Length: 254
Length: 236
Image (cartoon, rainbow over all chains, first blue to last red; front, side):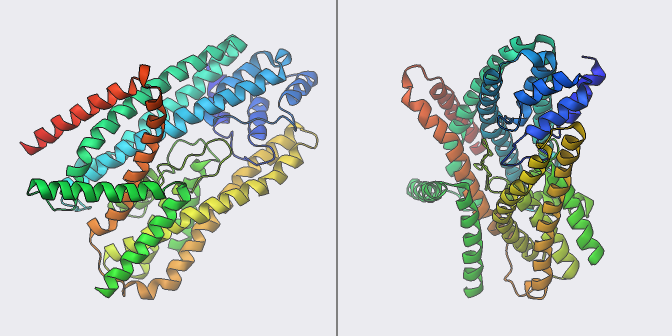
């Protein structure tokens, strides 16, 4: 695979989910990428369309699809359909866990908390938070580098090594374990720093031990209440809408 | 005002393509999209604030498998677009009142965005079924890239809907009570931190069951030690 073909492959993978649908999921996206990268015989096309046809379909984590595309480009004729579908699901599960549940929320949470720290440091004057305003790039740059590296490396390894490229799964699994450790570490820091940050942010510094304990109890109680309510992500929307409206009514009344 | 309205819908619809139709680079996340649109229309700091306020609220909304989570991307774009249009219509009104409107409409957009995404994926079924008739190359390419148009239109219409609401309620915005920034950020921040805890604690609770060889505990204890050290440093 030439460099130009690799770049072309990466660009076509950007459009993997463009026409995502319940009926076909990423199938058209996968076939579109494949068509864009190969000049093959009618027979080879039929082989691939059997592999990723109307019934089987194609669906995996969008950043991990490069590996599957590479493997299909390498030896699309002799891949067992069941093996290919199983690999999609494994990559889907592992990829979702790594990108959607761990890497993205972790980066977003850290950057957002960092920005909020910046706001409080500048007495909530949103028009002068200095260097903190570049914080969003602390999410965007690493996230784009990591996701596009996985896409491109998967594609190149798949084309080069064919079905043996699945050792790539191990690399992803180990990275996920490292992310879990980072998550656990940050949880420890947050557990300790949450009460004092909350007290500082609501500008009611802890004067005595009893007020400190009372304040911590209230913060944790409020926390547990929201924590319990957040069982589904839609409830976060309901909570925010209801909370803003109740807050508005209280402001109007008082 | 019409030009601003159309420009806001166009820019917002293009930024939201990153949600799924092109690349998924993360540009459509509120913490990026809101300041980006704010920058384009001259209100970068407000965009950054609205993006920061909304980013954590749906931190636990995960697109696992075929599940359609609440649409935090549209929430961020609608929040800043609503602020910008409301400001255009109410130049003299305090910015905090306009931000409150942005936060409220953004949180409603998260639900409408989820619903419209599910509807869009049912509409895209037709694209797939047309291509799957013969799976000919040109058929695949045409129907697949048509997905760009359907996704763009979905974004455009969603933002336009909320802009019309802003226009309809513009005269009443000045009647809102005055808010402070800490009041505006308190509720989303509370929900957001609980959302982070849910996201972190659930796998952690699973890990606790395998206490025998679990390393996460060690890393959490290290984190707590770091937290205490940081607290002492801050206190000194």
